[in-house]
Image 1 (cartoon, one colour):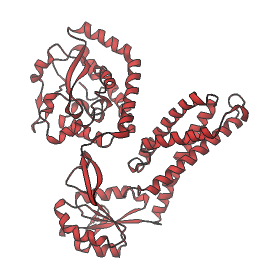
Image 2 (cartoon, rainbow, N blue to C red):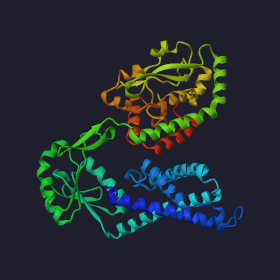
Image 3 (cartoon, rainbow, N blue to C red):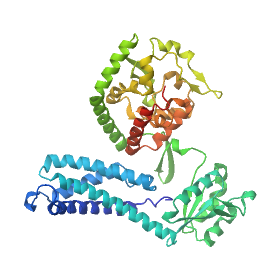
Image 4 (cartoon, rainbow, N blue to C red):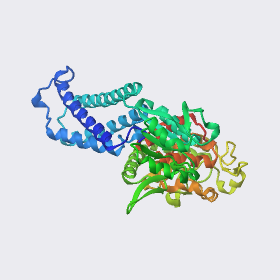
Length: 472
């Protein structure tokens, strides 16, 4: 496609390269343990390395790399994204491999394991960097450019052009635009000329030896494009359509075949299948470890709340969760008793009708409550909601039912996944934002979900909580 031709050949070639380099790393780690003067001197007879160990590595690395979508073009286009995804995949594979070694290969030297993981990091990262340099070199010399023509020089077309420029190192080359707007004729847009109108598309494709044609026009123009598209099929070009009538980031797009009829399916954004299993395992592990580490802190908070003001220590409040189901969310009490009866005094509507129900000067908040809210410690009991499966460590904000009653239709898409203790909303503004902007953050998270994104959000949440940014 427009990114890196995410096809079977690319995936197979990169996967085989990864496996071969990983096996080479294991063999070299074995040799290094015998040759390097670190640790107790060993002989080959003392290190049990057989074919089974190599097969184990292949199985683990294959499963982890595909589960974490290492070969997904979304994670390989930008170098920082590719590096983070690869580092996470190798780390998880190493963790699983360490467990296998402990159970079945206990005589494997620890230094050899360390050498292996370090070598694998260096080999796989080095391979990808070398591939990028090769593509950049080929792209700079136009050895195998893929020439692109964009039909439509409006906002959508310009956005596509910007992405193409970002990917120029891969060999993508924006030849120009075609557009019927007289004001755009003979102009240069995003560094590329407007070569003519829609009726000139076919001749431009032939004259400039175009490889890809991207239609970036409003829906009302698609009827007029039918003849152009059909005639393009007679030429050796690939045709792409960038729809602007829907924000497809809010949907999961699937392609289906209905007895020969191609159908594009638009579904609510969901995290399911293997991704759902990975997310649940991640939630259980993080929640359990967090409770084991933080129970002394939770005990101190409970005592402080009891001494500060009358009322229960933990509240169970109604929130709207996955699929719109009502559940009880647990929180340390941070307000005076009967705070819900004073809610009408703090709810604020913005001029455009949006609701903000959190204020810095909220009179209902207690002294201890102000501290635990600013540091988000009031949300620690939600770890039990995570264990129960009602919440996730990372996800959309759990919402009050009366807020949901005022939702617009598109905002209900956020209930397609379990709510989270933290989320994209927390690291990008927290309480400072109106509710509709929280929802936009939630939908962005759902459509871009990956285990790596969950890990990044959790890490960034620590910094946000320490700074007390946007919380009150």
